Amino acid sequence: CGPRANSMRPVDVVQLVASSRGGGAVHVRDLVSGLDAGDFAPQVAMPEDGGNVRRDDFAVPFHRVDIAAGLSLEALRRIRSLVAGVDILHVHGARAALFGRLAVLSLGKRRPRVVYTIHGFAAPHYAPPRRQILLFVEHWLARVTDAWICVSHAEKAALLATHAAESTRVQVIHNGIDLSRFVGAAAMRGKARQALNLPEHAFVITTVCRLNRPRDLTTLVSAFRSVQNDLQHAHLIIVGDGPLRPQLERRVRSLAQHDHVHLLGMRRDVPHILAATDVFALSSRGWEGLPLTVLEAMASALPVVASDVGGTGEAVVREQTGYLFPAGDAAALADCLRTLARDEVLAHQLGQRGLARVRELFTVQRMVRQTAALYDQLLD
Image 1 (spheres, rainbow, N blue to C red):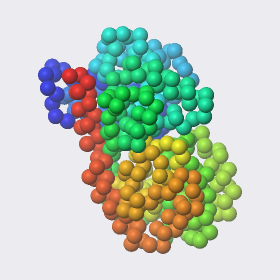
Image 2: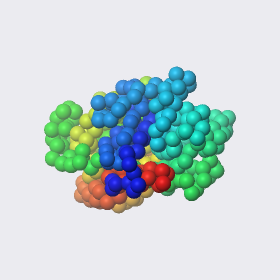
Image 3: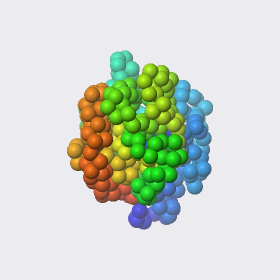
Image 4: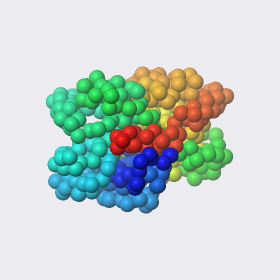
């Protein structure tokens, strides 16, 4: 990022995220590492809850804040102490946004500017009365929100439909990823499969996600069962952990060839796992921001098959870089997977076009540059 105008010192920015698991923490890691140290002095506040992002991933001050579950007055006091006197508090996800904005309410005119990145706008998708409560809280806390970042246009439309934010204060900044982590994925294919004990000629479908809503693992496993009936060499890799894991394990055990489904849990070597993969699949219901794992699969030159939910279609171009199927439609998902299994040339073409698209539109450098520009705009 370029130098800020009229600046005598770096801007103090606290990044607050409610879990070390999932895309929000990855986003924070990449954003912090990309901000120009001459212009910004970032700090990170995050739980240490065994996720894929850890304290030692950051070369900036790190503060453990336990807000992954429950309502902690001690956590609120700690956040208030951290952000008093800083320039910007950037909250990521609904839970961090709740804690962060509650903490700054009592700071009055001394409060920092507050930026809220929505990584998936879930509130409208809950049943009453929870939906009404969540939306009431969003309206109420808008008073201490200076800017919203939506990671897709679909998410921005969903937010504005609730009238919880003014359109002039909402900006779309698409997620971006560090492409260098996925360079040379094809060359690692053989070794990656050996490390995962996969047959050399297996047809490997991979999903990487938090095992929690909005992920629809029931549809994914049902589709795989259908594919497996036709393709005995098909294997399914599921990377991630979360509350839905016990339910998922029960469904997997019910499969005739349950040894073809590999539950790998939380992993930090996702590029190597994607190198062993033929097709990336993501099944979701309800909402999506812009899944980082979809972008990572595209960066690995993989065709993507994903639910047509939220902002996913802003990354995946139908029949150009992959396929979009109606949420919950296991038959449609299975048909897409079979098509790619039977046409390696098509799968390769879709993957190459996806790689070109992510290089053009979804780099971490672009995401960091646009976020830094928003910080400057708020302070000006």
